[in-house]
Image (cartoon, rainbow, N blue to C red; front, side, top):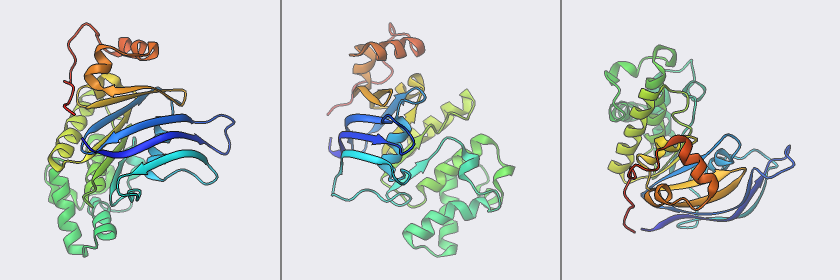
Length: 260
């Protein structure tokens, strides 16, 4: 198992906040695996996502190191696909679905308009949207919430990135659609041998597919490890409390520990 990213003693403080949003975080992210970053609101997990994507606001104070394999941070949209919580805020209401999914391929891969639209249709089919050729000409308001989130995933994958970062990508969806989106993400990253960084407050949802879990509280990394190990023997009392509120700890782990 090769390391994609090494985070060392990372602290992040927003300009308008007295306390760090992240404090002294050290974490490794493995290439080609599925890492779930879990925490309640305000735990720092979305700040970590924005830091990894290079999307922190100006005047944010950052200390520590993030070292990427190869030395160069991934380019958002090209190397790093992004999927956020609310698909409605991620999609432009006045542009067609085809225009929005094709944009990544045009900007980052250099495809012409016709080729980019063909790539967009291919990606819509990959995320299992029926009648993808017709959806290309539709507008966001004409789709359901689950369809819009699939469109956002298709757009994130249009440039064929090596990393997919999903920040609370299922929180705005109902339980059935959540399970469908998680299964879709799992299939897509497995097929493409991508790295998935899945950020959520729902440990039950994440434990069904993630290789590793990283538990955050109040901007601190409480513990991290293989999913099976964290579920079977959490090292921190907070992790056990979090697990007990979502999972039956007497049941067998949902994910077997991956070989390293």
